[in-house]
Length: 143
Picture 1 (cartoon, rainbow, N blue to C red):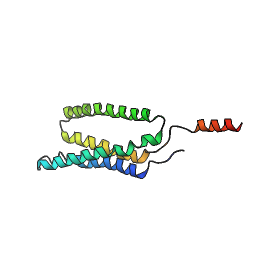
Picture 2 (cartoon, one colour; picture 1 turned 45 degrees about the horizontal axis):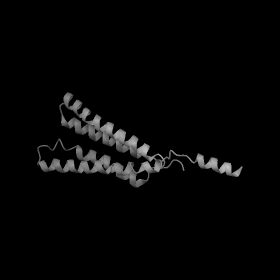
Picture 3 (cartoon, helix red, strand yellow; picture 1 turned 180 degrees about the horizontal axis):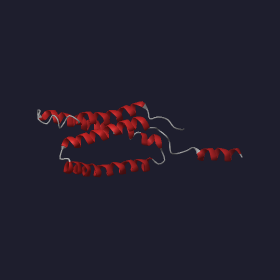
Picture 4 (tube, rainbow, N blue to C red; picture 1 turned 30 degrees about the vertical axis):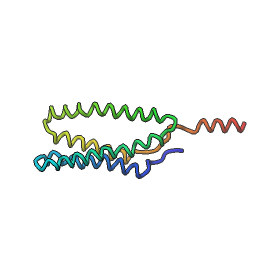
């Protein structure tokens, strides 16, 4: 058991989720004068992509550890909770200073594109549990 890249379907789902959300969010503000259904459809597609992204990386929790999966998922959930507090604060800050929803949507799209490329580049399945305990038991048996 050692370093191995995250399986391709997971990478595809996570990348598609992050990148798709960015692609669907970018034109929303520019198309605000079009039929309201246009922005509704774009927001709906972006939201569907936001739901698609976790299906790739959350499956890695069990690959990384079996014994400590609760701890690892707890860290992941904590980071998500912090991000769900920071996000609205950042939106308020951008709207206060820039006064443009365009800037907000571009910021969200940029963060999603960065997340997609970061996941594609760095996602691995590297177990944190080692087989040291089983090696020690095997050595003790041999002696």
